[in-house]
Amino acid sequence: TNDSAWNNLLQFSARSRYQVAEPFQLFGGIEEEHTSFVGNTNLQNGDSLISRYRTSSYAAGKYEPFDNVDVNGSLRVENISDLSLTELLPQAAIDFTPIQYVTLGGAYSKSFHAPTLNDLYWYQGGNAKLQPEHGENWQGSMSFERRWDDLQVTLSGTGFLAHIDNEIVWEPFSGSEYSPINIGEAESEGIEFRGEADWAVDEGTRVHFEGSYTLLNAENITPNDPNYGKEIQYSSPTRSLLIAEIERENIGSLSLLARYRGHEFALPSNDPATELPSVTTFNVTLSSKEFQFGLLGLRAMLSIQNATNVQFVDIPNDPLTGETRRVTYEDILNYPLPDRTYHFSIELTYH
Image 1 (cartoon, rainbow, N blue to C red):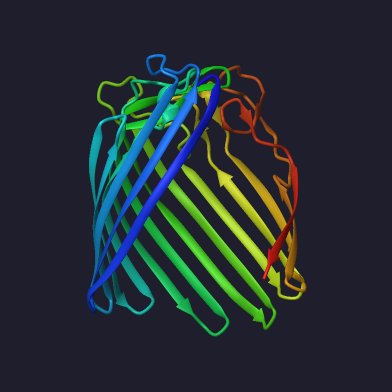
Image 2: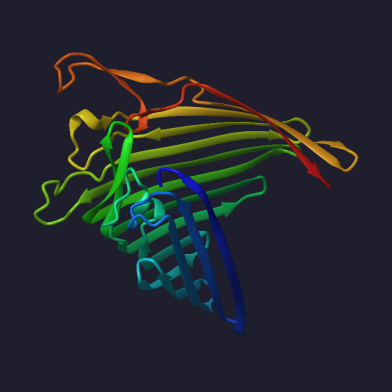
């Protein structure tokens, strides 16, 4: 809406678990969510009240026929009141440990994503004709995990494939204003590598490393679409994340987070003028140990985001102009990355 008076969200959930026999467990649950939004104008026939009930229930089972095999499956039923939709969402997965320290996994699921009230009814940019997303997802993985006296290491690789009908994406329609649209058919495939290590240097010192690298190919595969074969907007073909932390028990901790994102396109047409260049940012966080004052604990934290103050890049021989062009780093078109930013916080805990 362009002038909201108030909105609310009410949620209720209940879950249960039942051990049928030693290798077999059953799970079940229900969830109820009610959202409403009140304003003086919206896209729903001029009515000032928008309301939605989302009701879902699920049943699941976990079966461990052998010590090295874990099989689970579930069925979820979800209903969205204002869209008059009821969805059946099955899921199945298996983990198998053929040799010590190595686990193989596979999974299949159906997914569903209903447009939000904002997607549909926002007065300026909502799209009342937006369709829900439906997808099928496949995944295969292999992991290695081992612990020595002072060191624990985990390495994994996960391949994935998703086929999505009516994928919802937001595209600019006026300056920095965006509106959601559907992409008829989209397919995303890729692989993610992850690694993690914890090293106890001595009795009071711990070092932690964590990293991931993702290769992604996400394309519009809608037949006869003018954007057929183009990259899905904001789907970078490469991403990586590195976290390094050292913690001293009687002092505190120091951590570094390095995040890399490859190029992205802001429009489904992959217009070169809307290509966002790759960027790497660094965040640094310094946290004190917890100081105890009777029953009150105090911890101080200082973080520097975008510590190297990355703001823009010069593109020589730009294909659009043939000259050097300065491009501001952005994760979303027309929304520049914040420059170097400092955050200071104090955490109080009552024991």
